Length: 177
Image (cartoon, rainbow, N blue to C red; front, top):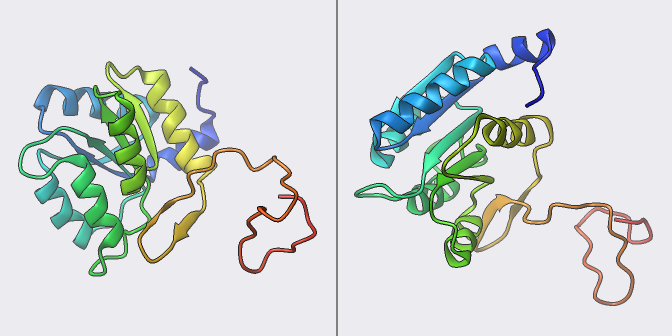
């Protein structure tokens, strides 16, 4: 794992993170790992309902979220955050932590608007890489009638030609993507 420079560590110290996990032991591990990165402002809740209440009243730099929780799972929580009009956190990065790696579940998480995923057992390196991604290289958000979430495309260096090329409004049609 890359070591954080003193400048990075100072930036990490000011981040506010919400950890949502019904497993006390896992939440404690996540907090310890975040603290080891220099992240000190960590709010921890045991369920998505509590997390939604906090999202409405506090601002977070990112959310670490368990997939499988009672009452409201991580997918439903993400959908509610992305569709919420009563808070300013619709575009907060959401890093989902899960032991479920079946394609259908990964697609469901992506389609709900999850920003990144970490597979259990989570290593500090995996978590660091996901955090660095959402903080240092955030993906633009896509807003449509049926979706609000991070752009699903990972690579912007492809050049597409022909009539099937999609161009975002306001971009130069002749420029390479």
